[in-house]
Image (cartoon, rainbow, N blue to C red; front, top):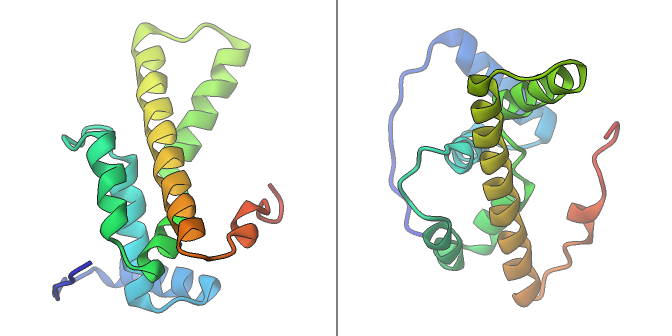
Length: 140
């Protein structure tokens, strides 16, 4: 995949968070930013790009980009809010707006799973061992 340079001025607290995440995951700051943006775009249910187009686009990615995509976690805000609404649904009935929000979040989750799965399938086709991706993270 072709890349372009982009200069972005970030508030210092955000930059420090990104640096910390990069250090924890043993990535460069650039790799961490690409992963964060990729995860956010994958989770964006308002995207006009169809899932078919997203999946087809994965075929043009380099192996490194596929590994990043396959490792990308679900956006934390999507994960947290889905858990909140699921917990509330167990205790009581959701409002119509909450039920609609949960459906949108589940759509984001399904899209994320499909994209990660396709990235893993492409890695397999290219001769990579994806077994490490199939082991649940510690504490999961």
